Amino acid sequence: MKHRVVLLVLLALAAGASAAWGCTIIGVGKKASADGSVIVSHTDCGPDSRIRVVPAQTFAPGEKAPVYWGLQDPTQPLAAPAEILGYIPQAEKTYAYFRSAYSHMNEHQLAIAESTTNQRPELANEKGKCEQIMTIEQAQIFALQRCRTAREAVRLIGELVTTYGFLCSSGDGSETLCIGDPNEAWIMEVFGVGRSGSKPAALSAPSGPPDGSPTTMPP
Image 1 (cartoon, one colour):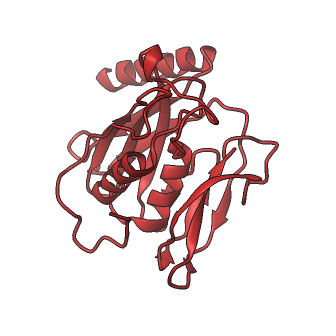
Image 2 (tube, helix red, strand yellow):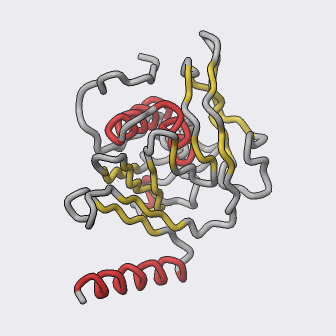
């Protein structure tokens, strides 16, 4: 009976979010699931439902990775939207992952769920009117390409939005991510610094570099 009540509550929350044109994320840790699994769930209430598998790739030293705008726009090519906001250093090797409006899982069972959340109006920014370029959906792709664990992904996304600036891409909202792997799940909040800020701010991440992290970030 208890499980039925919890399920009904979750369904009601999801229905309410859908009515408001929002997303719902759910994270379940190992100690809360019946079989010790980590569960990450995401309902995306946007217009783009396309999904494709991007294979693992190898890149030459010194290559750059584009930072795209329009990753959740169904009128844009899923592989590479037309507008590029900037570039970051490319990883030597990337992992295979599922590409979608908000890309969600890679070959190492790293999973990311996304939900746009509210923030104070003065923290919002707009493309073309600020220096920030890193949308949450682009940061998710970089994390799935370069990370094996949830902790690595939290740290990398924090580095990306701190270095390149978090750009609001779902209206004027901030973002909340549920990031999980077979062992644990993290909740991460990212918010803006307004139009005038050239640097972002916003992460909830463990300290110190991850052991064996494949990521390389500029100083």
